[in-house]
Image (cartoon, rainbow over all chains, first blue to last red):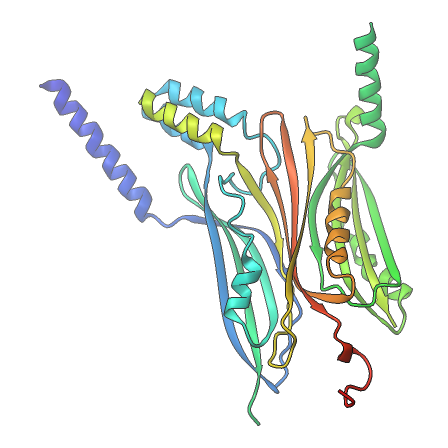
Length: 149
Length: 105
Length: 115
């Protein structure tokens, strides 16, 4: 009876903790920015567009730390063991789908199928939460169309 | 004995050539006419990770322009790489920027 | 808890982890009257064991492959992606270059009035 009561307190605190994590704003990090040619001539009418592709990244070290904080040392060891299989240079957290940014060119073409693309800014950024993150590639640009004179 | 010799040889090969890592790259639109290639390269040795400026990268554009006076340089592939020398425990790193493009005059 | 760890381990072992470092994009012109381009792409890889990689020639390979696929035209809208597939004591650096190939038409140069 006493153990059930303690377990319910722990689960309710865990639920509150998880809810607080979801509600709190995340931290954003920028890794790379590139700015392209800008055409601002008056003969063209610009239509701005934004494309954002993202994938969930997992930080195994933080997963292990959270598991340890919740009382699971085996969870921490498991996470450290799995991290050995993710060796190499990383930008942000590793993701499990490498193709999420491959169709960017086609997405740009969808936004501007019959104009001139200009002013492209490519940003590689990360939105960080505990243990997970959003690995984001954002592209801002303008679709230029000739003005009807 | 043979395995020790092989290990030493591998270490020497790694030491002479260094470990090269690509840090970033970019490629601009490639023109139709690709007969004249222009290349510029700048590098800087960094000891114990102490680096106080990146002026070596500023000269690239001027170098390309001087090779294509009065023309348009496009199709530029820009690579930024770091080479660290393992026998020196990577305390000596060479940062290299290379830009290769086509000149149309 | 053990079942969750086992399931997670299975998923992570079966699926490789990857990291995208750099994405670069370029403008292009698809105004009315422009010929419809062909989408071309070039990929190259470099396997790295224990961090030993002696060159970055795989970048030049992708560059040359992309140009070979559009040898008689111009390539615009090039998007370049540099990523790494992670592994145990080794990883693979990957380059993907995609672009629009605008082929040279017979009217590309000179007087088209005769046509």
